Image 1 (cartoon, rainbow, N blue to C red):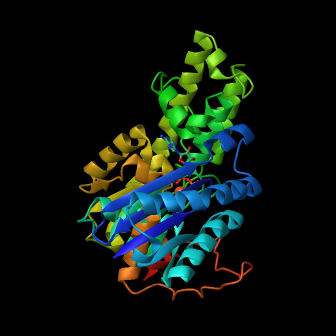
Image 2 (cartoon, rainbow, N blue to C red; image 1 turned 60 degrees about the vertical axis):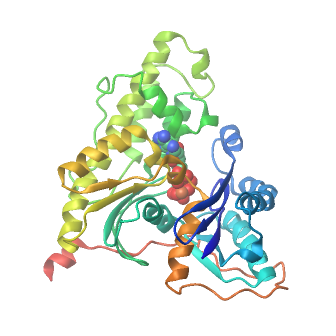
Length: 372
Ligand code: ATP
Ligand code: FE
């Protein structure tokens, strides 16, 4: 089995070819970091344009690098949600064109499921059930993966995701957004004193597994304003040394509390998960923010203290990529879950199946399960 995976749910155009045994034959990503830096966020219409410009080249490159032609594939997998529908459509239509032309089955992929399952490509003995913390630009999820396609959501964010908080903080601190807000902030935080500002840890009084980052964002904004330093229009490269170390202190203090919140929630989620599935022995941490070294180190302590093992894919498989889509395609394909090949002459305006809002699994209600 060999599958092409296509990912266009947000701001990266990505494609990869992966074999059934997990061998990665190619991996191509075209990023819109420049656009993001210039416009301060993802504008759907502009992101769509960028995907349209990039998609054919990215997919061809993935096939070429894998030394394969499209007719050698077993199937084509593409992200169908959640994400921006204008963007999703570009990848799904490309997948259908290739599949139609070469009579290949199609596998529609859930982006967040792919963030979680790519851990099984990395760690061959990661079996269901396992617990997963998925942290990215748009999601903050704690998921109990009971089996392929069977997920229980233990927690989600009630407002912003942690990646969004990293990106905003980085922008307010005048960091170089071309590197990506998260990586730039992680780098600056290494110079700072994480105890210099006492931001309060979100939702300590809520005994659940949900997240909140909007309040922390506001605290950071106020700290920046009260210190009268740096704005987006005063980049850090032009800051004096005092100003730089002051920014670094904010970055480090923000990061400490943002991650403490993750630690709190993981701790509780492990307890919950062990009650539901006593056999779990692994916590997967994935999604763009999982490429952060501080996050990885802090969470490894939580996990070790609980007697579990941490499975964290390498950074290139944590941020958006085609490999995770191809791999999740393989898992579903081998389980017999795929759509038949589309007709070769499908009209351009054919209504494709997109799921811009698509929850991953059912919600877990602690009260209900305790009553049972
Ligand atoms: P989602 O997966 O929720 O749809 P997305 O696909 O846009 O969102 P990912 O590529 O999975 O996002 O993750 C991107 C996010 O990860 C961004 O918010 C980015 O700032 C953050 N991120 C990337 N690297 C780091 C890092 N080293 N430290 C902190 N955050 C990071
Ligand atoms: Fe993502």
